[in-house]
Image 1: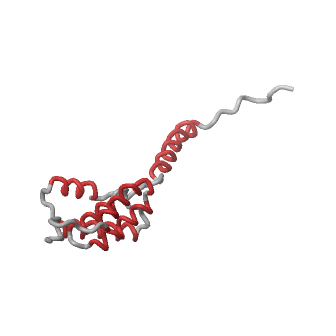
Image 2 (image 1 turned 90 degrees about the vertical axis):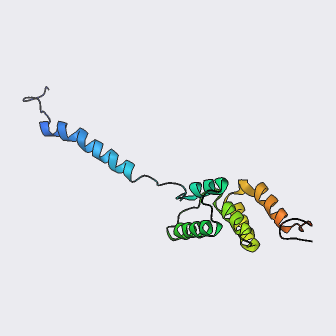
Image 3 (image 1 turned 180 degrees about the horizontal axis):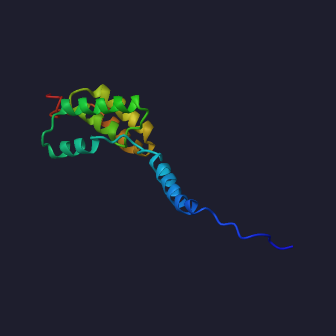
Length: 138
């Protein structure tokens, strides 16, 4: 039993549209992929400014980072590693040791690999100030 009739050919438009449709589908899938893991925004630049002390304003830095943290909470995004630790150092420099403690504990929870460093900062915070150190004029 053989094949009856002439061979069936695919319409020529199918050969032209097929590859184009595949390309569009691949681009659409790639565009809807996962977004960034962390909400970095201006955090790296702010850290750099603190290190350079160029245009460094602790109050402004704290305000900008707190705004970024609120934005992250509102969009259910994660803060990057070191964010809370850096913000804690800024708060400590501004005289708010209680807020620094909260932020360092939160950094330790969010990134357990930072525990050794955060514990070291917390121990220093809890240690009595020595005479002649800032904050202890005696």
